[in-house]
Image (cartoon, rainbow, N blue to C red):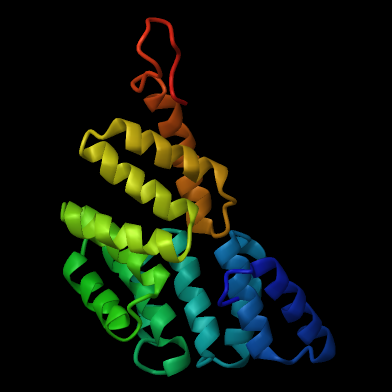
Length: 226
């Protein structure tokens, strides 16, 4: 799960629950993995079951926060994630990155940065935190900072969302050729997370739009780069 190999993780969690149906750590972990893959109905069922058995299940609280975030219930997501941040070293990093996404959705960029800088202070090569911080920099129009984080994140781990974010930055700067390249790359990579799925759908739309703006070749009728 930590390596974003979610299909393999699900097989192991399924097997763990076959061996021990009362293993709510495995159940909550499976629920979280299903949610991050975009399988909301299945994921929420596992999370709810785990929380019914133990309201303090930290992985289940994380899953509940993620479910609320993905459904746009940002206030509820914040309540759930606040129950995890600072409580367990095992889950603090992930909880802070997710809470930063919630805070960004609520336009609270200052506190989103606090969470992400806390993570990156101890884990400077955390690609998820770098990627999320770049989104905060973009919202703050701090484009140099955003580009620096995006380039680092891409060097560590390519993803649909990070290429989409860099493409948006390039488009804002009117660097349409670079934007087109990144939007195209975002459509080519496999969508691993629910955030990737959303970014990839938007990238496909942007690819079509920019195909009318970015010519290829110097002659009339040479076509487009996309």
